[in-house]
Length: 124
Image (cartoon, rainbow, N blue to C red; front, side, top):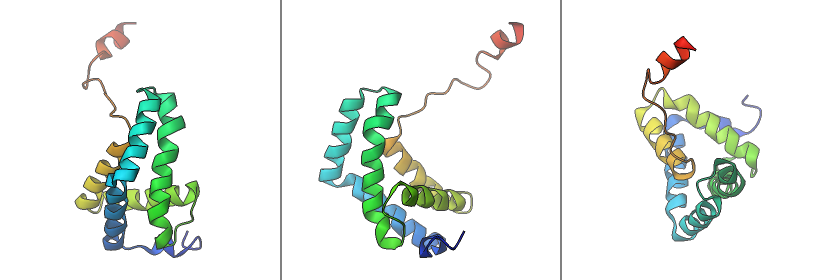
C-alpha cells in the first residue's frame, strides 16, 4: 500500500491540513461558480450529477492534493478519499470535515425513517 507514493504516509494531522485546503478550494469564487454551473446542468438528476458535478469536484480536489504526492488523476482522488476514510473513525474532526466536503458535491440523501415501510415488506 505504501508503494504508491508518499501520499499514503500522511498523518492524521497532515490529512486534516489537506482536507481543510480542499474544502477551502471548493469555497473559492471560481470553483464555487464551476460547481454552481455543474449543479444547474444536473437539475437534481442523480445521473446528471455524476456526469456534470463529479468531474468538476474531482478536478478541484486534484488541484489541491497533487501537491501532497497524490497522482493528478481520479486514482489520486480515490486514494485521498480512502486515506480520509481510514482516519474518520479515529478522529472526529476529520469525520466532520469529510462530511462537510462530501456535502459540497454529493446531493443530500433522503432516507426513510428507520422502520418505515417494514410492515409492508413483511406482509407482502
